[in-house]
Length: 343
Image (cartoon, rainbow, N blue to C red; front, side):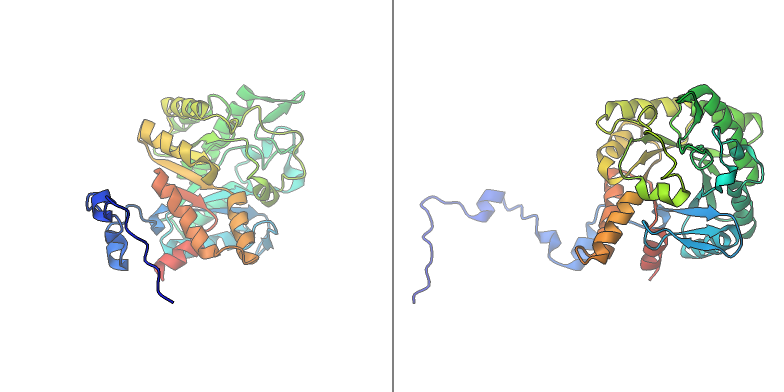
């Protein structure tokens, strides 16, 4: 059988004529050339590792909804901080799972000098002074209802909550926190925290604002991790941002910067890459994303089922944050990625 060769249509142009000899595949032809022109790179310096703290000693609990992530007692958290420092991870973000007997309607335990989060900060800083510690002053791990603020007559009261988180921020700074990262989304919290820190001599403690924290479906595994999933009544739509809104997110970020935020964070991450890009282009300040528990768990679950290459998906997702403009990423993948980059 003769091989069929389609006739070239009369007047058809060659590929070089079509592209003007601009063949964009030229620099993709080899590994060395692809590396040479790569626009964005992920390094260990981009990683912040969120960890979960519990009371006790030599205690480690698996979080079923987050494969490979554990709650750990302070002594074990110190060991993990030492490991993180050896891997070159710049900072940890600590989140407590507070015993139920210590939770109440107002989250008052956050004002205890020796609560679990402050004890963890002091212990980690004593053992690994070179690693950064980022602490959250939201009330949800400390409340009996799982909301981020003080609950009065079914309403999260803004101003009373702001006063409490500002006081808690001072205690966290005194314990050794390097960055206060308030995630409660109350109006005026950044300015109140900045004033409280400065009034108490903590001028060098920075504020990473959860400037655009959206009312998202991707937080479920995190709420299991801190023990609030079964407590939450209703939702958080009266204080988190509607995920349909981007202009509102920009206004929130602008307000937080005006009040004294040193850096911005977008949470969740991958569904909001457009917000990251807008904030970076608009304000040109250090901008971060939180690759939240739901994002992490989806990759882990799909990988465990053989549906995707988990390692490649992990790296691709993290590089997407860099491409969108992030200066750093809070991710539960941090030690896994750091090990890979080191290797």
